[in-house]
Length: 210
Image (cartoon, rainbow, N blue to C red):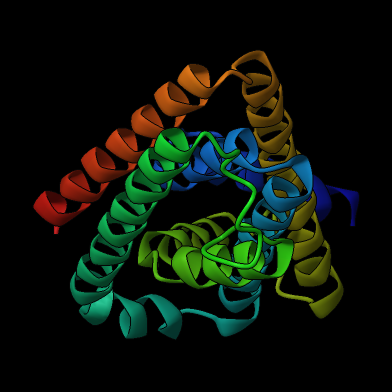
């Protein structure tokens, strides 16, 4: 059992640690709003990773064949969503800078509340087909780490969730520290512009790869 949980931890960190658009988005949200918002986004990503790990662990060999044909369209949708988030973040950052308001002031709009951040990041992460293909390949290729039994599969999924949640929450905490260090209007402007630019660049890279 412990081997299955450890295998889940390794798999979870393997998919979570590489810095991509989701990580940049969590960092930017925490820097511009609060740790609560960033933590909600972080847990949303961990939830999606856990769901995909469960699909891979319980779905068997047919899962990769089902997901692969729609991988390209899903990447396009994800890239369009990321571009929209980048544009929205740029607009809010510039508006807040001009009015000298903190970016978290319009708390009911955009991704400025924990509930909205959770829903948005959950949906965005679920649009990434590479995650479920990664877990499916790992499960099918390493039966020593994940036995076919339901208990071991559940432990594997739990390990993935714990690993993903711990890493994403670390990112949220880092974003909060950055936001506090750059608390001036000019500092928040720089943080918002850099975050939006990175998300847009990663969205374009996703489009090109599809």
